[in-house]
Length: 198
Image 1 (cartoon, rainbow, N blue to C red):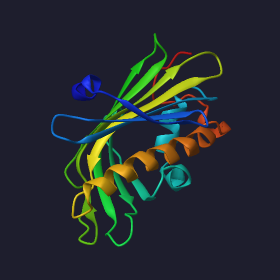
Image 2: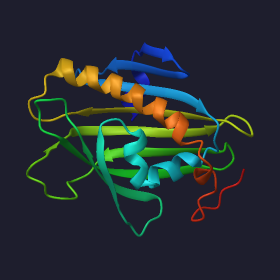
Image 3: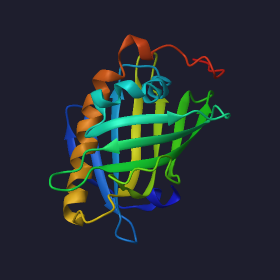
Image 4: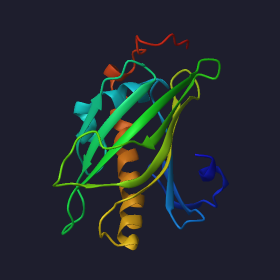
């Protein structure tokens, strides 16, 4: 993720309390960054992401999300299916997420990297060059800042201009839905598997 910090970001959306920027790296890959402040605890992001049954309620264009249990509680292997714009075939994404807690700063970061395919599915095309990071940072007793920074290629024959446009719009719609979803009471309890302070 070191590359994303050196990019020249351009603001594309700033409305309804969500900001979205895009940038291009040296290989002409599009990166997207989104940010919002939510009425939720900083660990609520992890609770929301782990509630895979609710993914269709807030992640734009998602069909299904499955987490493969790992012996290390700081590692998640995640399989995700997405709708692709017509007339293209739907996509799948196979990733490894690595959690890092900073209890002094009251923050969580989740590094996301592409992982070898978790399930064989000949009907779906695998997304490529997936990488990114979630951040959740405590702002005060009632609010947290949520940030996503990432990039991915759709794979197959979706034109670059369409993929870039969809990435930008889809990220914005996802963050709008996240703002409502993450504030639900069921996501506010501390995850019991981790020794977290306020």
